[in-house]
Image (cartoon, rainbow, N blue to C red; front, top):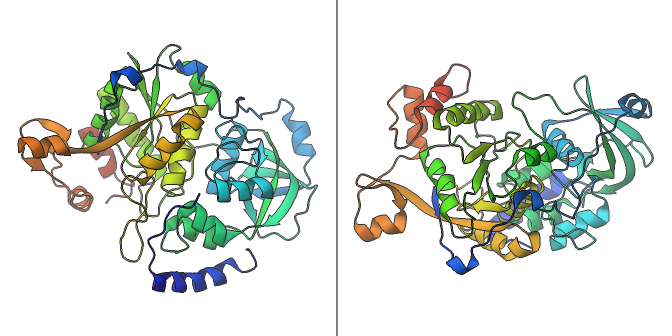
Length: 425
């Protein structure tokens, strides 16, 4: 399923030339209400993993698995996240990297070759001509053995098709398309993985099995995905989601930020993790659970919204908050959005029943002098006085040491962002 493109005819011609050269041979938001009749609770530990089985590929005899390998590859940060989510079951039902049939089926039809919904390809790229079918490769993070990878097929990536269908554009102004075009190798490798060790990170990433063991047995679990520090509007968003008519009584929120690679101008994952930890301590909300996801962002808008829902389903979540322009991206040339503000919400809602995860959509939240945070529509209807602080002004105030209003950001989060070495100063 192709997401509509916004590129002009001129830009399409320009980017087609650049892509041809790059590819070479490789072909703040309040939840909407739902009628009470639709309110239904789903027990979280009864949330079936995607495809029916929660994958766990870790082996007992690590030494034997390591000795059976014939080659070694050092994983880049993006590949490290993918390997971790395959081996720990975050990408269930995958037990390895996709073969060409699954890859093309996902790219063209938003499903695996067997018909199961799957929205983004999970592939292992390389330019190494020496890798052949039958090789068993030891995948490493520096000196740490992470997994073994038995090569079952090697095929040319269909990069122009992948970009247009998955990202909705062939323009390299899009960071996801740029990543596919310029960073990924021309070949994709498929094959089974065996898990050896969890990667070493500055932030803890629990497996789906570990997270499920800690979730309540009899309550809905609403997932909130983010890739930036949580400010007041975000906190209002995910705590108010618990009042949505789709969410059962006494439901909980699992804030599950991605702490892996993301857009170049985003705050480093380790710094983001520190902001989440101090906020968890400051708020001490018993209905909010915090966990961290080793995931590399694609900025693929509607397609990525489905991807995030599937992953959180595997972690035991029953509901997922879909924000305005979720996983969206702007052109690096003119700053225009690649996706409509509600495209991700609409696409996710259309796939919600098939996926088995309820969407909790959201509307824009604004802060008002009279009533604090309310929906933009309510502020307009009541004639309330809105207060705004743009991201640009916020970053400028951070760097200048100016006072940040507490209606906008938590004091503890601001202190972390201003600490030496955290990339703000």
